[in-house]
Image: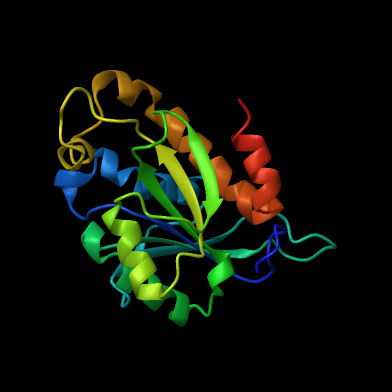
Length: 204
């Protein structure tokens, strides 16, 4: 059972979404927005195509402590469609020799109020096709998730249609704060571990 302390070694942070300009502003793509925010914050440079069917940038996050360098972090956005995200994630873990407990998947979450961020390791996928693909490809659900709340669709709107629509005008005003909070959560996981990060981001 992984501990709540941040593991040493390289990390892989994957932001889920769909490829192409038509999907960029969709609620379903907020995970990829968070990963790109992290790249911008830490001067990771341009994302480059990787043979694992992903766009990748590398940086360092947190502090190594005791004079050691900060942990190496691979930031990645699959270039496949959401329901095929698992293959790229599994390929990146192998290529960069990252342990499963160092994997963070950032994704949209219908069952969390819009604007909230929650963290967990393992558990169900809640009907999220990207998470289902990742769990299937890895053969386990036991990986860290940064869950970015987008709320439930209004009225009787189909959730599948809701996540594939762009954020509305009011949501777009708040989006930089949401993306920033989720990026903060990733940094906290790397630097402090799961339990302290949950205590910080789950506070009422």
